[in-house]
Length: 199
Image (cartoon, rainbow, N blue to C red):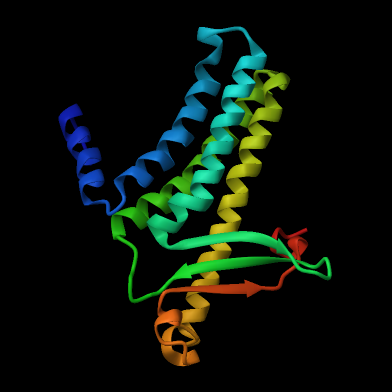
């Protein structure tokens, strides 16, 4: 554990030096931290509620998109999305990297930490808003929680789906797909949105 400022900087620097995708890792944390910092410190810089709301919502949307489409894919090799087929049935599609190309341990650890820690911080901010009776800011926190928990649930299911596929031996050459199966395996898991999100 870092005890001085120099140790902390070398620790953060070491993480980025050991990362296979330092830019993706930086952006994952940048958007999340920036949204919280703007939300918490906005009253010190401006009393304009609309400006604060717009900036935080844009940062949250950028974080949601980045986490789902860039950071998740590059740092842990997972991606998910919801798709509707011709019959109108909604299902989740999970995409995972070939297990012969495992994720960098630092990238993976930092991704999962960010995925689970930041929703907890937003829950703490929701409690603070309720205690301070700052009801006007509660919709921003709820939106942050929706975005964050969507990524938590999606990546948790994508990770579970990938582990299940590899454990069952469906990946790679077992389908006779050769190089195609060894690249990215896309699995369509037909589950209704309600079943995935527990409602």
